Image 1 (tube, rainbow, N blue to C red):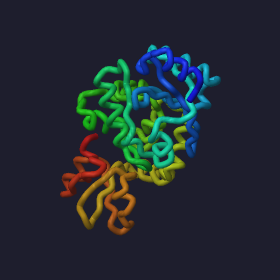
Image 2 (tube, rainbow, N blue to C red; image 1 turned 90 degrees about the horizontal axis):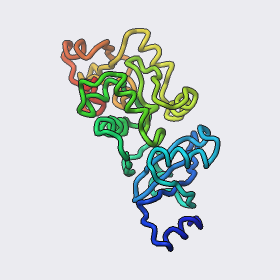
Image 3 (cartoon, rainbow, N blue to C red; image 1 turned 60 degrees about the vertical axis):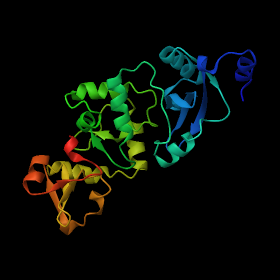
Image 4 (tube, helix red, strand yellow; image 1 turned 60 degrees about the horizontal axis):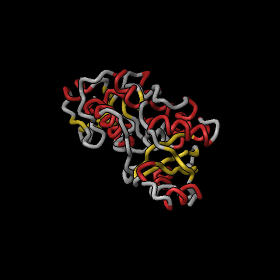
Length: 244
């Protein structure tokens, strides 16, 4: 444990008055990850900061609490970065409005290796009337990009959107998760936003795990939810395409 943290504890300073942080190596990028009271309070790619002091200053400005270096990361963070699944982690969203918290929790629901259009977030978060601009603003306000997988958002054609991370990093994260940009480009060029299975009569987003298992002979392309439903297809219960 860092000396500064030991001193604070011996002085009787309550743990809710400060946070700890560690540098955690991920398969694509290293992150500063701050935490307190068992929850992630902030995170960001190391490369985006001039150094630890810059991260500490940004954390203090955002949360009002100092972030002190610690030797061990919060349990679960290393596994979340390795597997791309963060469901065991808790996040402290601080003073973020309820709308933004709900949007960020919806982002957490996008599985590794899959994409969802930004508009999908509205229904998933229970705010179907939200505009794309409002949803993206909520996404960019999150305290822990990469851990919260904002790189798994796209427009309806699977193309990158402004999620708050550098384009190059988003491309690297998506490549690491084996998201096939060339395949998505072919679907977009053909006007295909959903894929149906001729055997199950279910339609999905193209990156859904179920859609990737549809063989070429049974793959049925659709340009809209209305077209898929009109052909007698049901929405996938996993990727929930009707949310868009």
